[in-house]
Image (cartoon, rainbow, N blue to C red; front, side):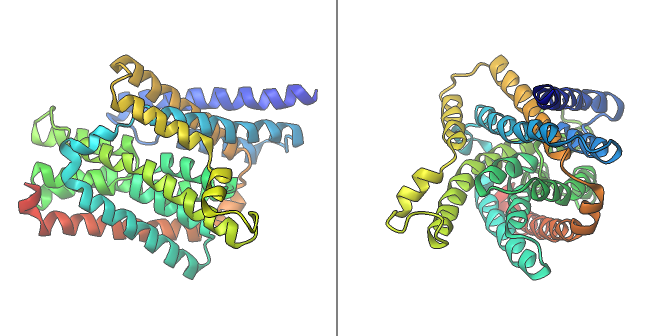
Length: 349
């Protein structure tokens, strides 16, 4: 019975992950765009089930924990195969100064304001990373490095989802209203909308508005921005290794390099390896499509496992501050991107 409950939990998370991933196709057919990414759908569904069903017991929770950790690792590794170091040399290279500035701005605001209003450091890091890089993918990756709890992951997701949705719906119309060029819109959408699917949705709206279905500027910028996840992940690993040494969690005679070697998550190494393989064109178009599909499925299944540990009463009693932090961080990054688009319109073109 013990094994059945554990494996039943794994099977249920996989089922929810599959259905949540497929829901994006339904959303596209109904609304013309993805309104809510598969991982977020899976998180919400499992949270609802967790709150309306009786307590499943320890063995069931062990199964969901396995999903939230292992599937997350595999999803991150496969995501690396969809990235390319070569993208930095593509059309999005001009956005690098803004991308780097927004990364520093996002983490600074999230950590300073988070500390001020009583949000945990881990949640602040997740909010900062999710806002400045790539939403749920960044949160999933960084959560494994900083050893965030399931609650902190859920709060981080909730903190950025609302504002990401607002951005995806409104930015194409704002750009048109203030007379932005195509490239100015690409800079703003590519640097200030979190999730890749949301950027794709906003770009599709803008394509229809300008009558140019071949316009892909926003996604080009977003791809460069997403590539920064590799460097941010490595930086976080080094910083947290220093904290481990300082707090006595590592041997007193260990060097920082030794601590990094001990604490470095191997999935990040494979993440970088996969990105390198894609840079050298190892994966075909079909292979890339498969990697994207499977990684999204694994992320959704992992977040289904997370959702089974979250009670709504905890989110509403403890999650309002993270959501407020997400709004403040989002507003700062959005302001930065819009100001850059205005002030450097000649550079952007």
